[in-house]
Image (cartoon, rainbow, N blue to C red; front, side, top):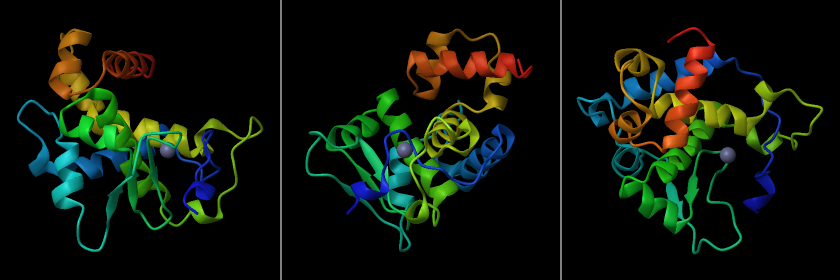
Amino acid sequence: MIKQNHYHQGYVVNPLSISKIHSKALDFRMDYFHRIDRYGRIDISTILEIDYGDGRKYAILESDSNGPMGLTTNDGIIFLAPSVYEGAINGNGRDRFTLAHEFGHVCLHQGQIGFARASTSQNKIYENSEWQANEFAGAVLLPDYELVKNKGASIQILAEQFGVSLECAEIRKEKAQRRGIL
Ligand SMILES: [Zn+2]
């Protein structure tokens, strides 16, 4: 039942620009500003466990085997593989990214997933749910304004400070440079 709503290549959703996605990511950081430390790192697993309450839910999948590592239903219930849940709590960058990605589906795609069709090469990247959720995750964990604030910091330092993988820190920096922000 759950897997029917989840396509690995993503599904077709309403198109969103990078700036629109980033503004949604900033809204998310504002909503959970009390979960951001003074160095700018957001405590994404605590948000899931403590703040993501009031009628909304999450669940841990039974095992990691042959399923997705995370998925979000049309009504905003987040399912996570056990290793992702544990990893996010332990500060693993990749797992924190997966969780932030699922929050992206919650914030951007609720109500659209049930009606969505699988994305193909015919579709534009900015109407692809996975591209949008990844852009959201990157901006939630390491937003543009923090990149500007920490302009002199190495990839290594950025990754440690913001709890992201080296790859993620590098991509975020490159993208910001390409868009003329850095
Ligand atoms: Zn996804």
